[in-house]
Length: 478
Ligand SMILES: [Zn+2]
Image 1 (cartoon, rainbow, N blue to C red):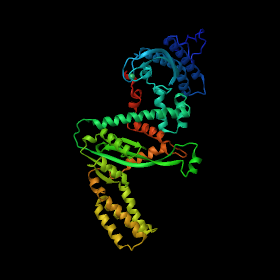
Image 2 (tube, protein in one colour; image 1 turned 30 degrees about the vertical axis):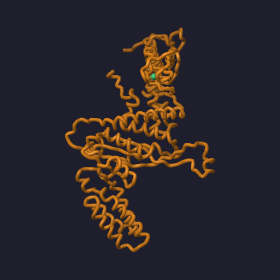
Image 3 (tube, rainbow, N blue to C red; image 1 turned 135 degrees about the vertical axis):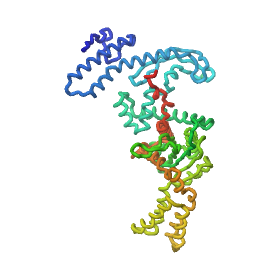
């Protein structure tokens, strides 16, 4: 059945339906206008031979934009009016109230203006605007929570110049590059404060998981990668004259943890970890240690039958493990062990690939399926036969490596127990994070990169809704 739209733009306001109408009109009238505009759009769309459904999708969103903007503005105003004049921080009634402080900010549906009441909190000794807290506006930011979340997500996923364009392309929200950058960093700093709080809670009162029928092992993996930072913009020449480089590489310490019984396979046979915690920080080893410990507690370390730390040969990994999880077993990444075996082989056989392979293959097999002790014994014999010189020195270094990590090479037992022998998952995490943080020509500031890393970890750990509660809100159940 064909419906005919009889409503027309109000002559008094003189505004076209898609544009902002006089705010005094009831929403029902605005809705009728939007419906009218939609019907006209549909008719045009049906006639237009050069438009596919995508064109209508763009047009329809545009037709209802003003209605949504008005509804949002009125809702915000009504909520502001209904907010009691008490301090949002300490709940003390505010004094010296003054109404009608206008604030304009961008939302998903365009800019809106809200009048709020301000008051003085004697306890905090600060001026407060309770409506801002009720609406989820930050003290200084000019954006609604919806836009804050979008800026934060996009900036943690892609360079800000792309983020700004993608945001406008997908949502119509215009945030210039510098503004988006600032907003995302502000959200990242908020995420860091929340992370500290959550970590303290996890350490103080480890989460009680449901009773598990089978005892499980907690797997903890550590690694690091570096990031290029530069803080002193515009001072490169001056710094170089003083013999300092304006940029520096800085370690981003990364960790991941998961329960061994949360490891499985996809239908296609690809290994997957169903629940996994992630940590990445450039604030040093102490920060990594405490963040990863809190993450492991959240993932069930407190109730684990045991814990296993996996990593490459880096000294800091084992020191940190001894320090934080002294009871945990330690295992050297199998692939790194093989690389060190190969280094010995290259020293012995140089370019002779055939002899190199013939020597290496049985050793790798023994290391994996038999015992490290057996392999080390053969390496010792190789070393004993070498005449003094550079080759002997190189081999001695590798042999020392094997002796040092001997107890961390229990690969046969690991395979029998169905435990991982490699630190692939944490290495994959490093690679993925680096894709965002190490693009050509990119520099990070000391504070900026931690903020964005923190946002990325909230996303990966499935904790985005703790930062932006509306993102887990289901309107169908409201
Ligand atoms: Zn207060």
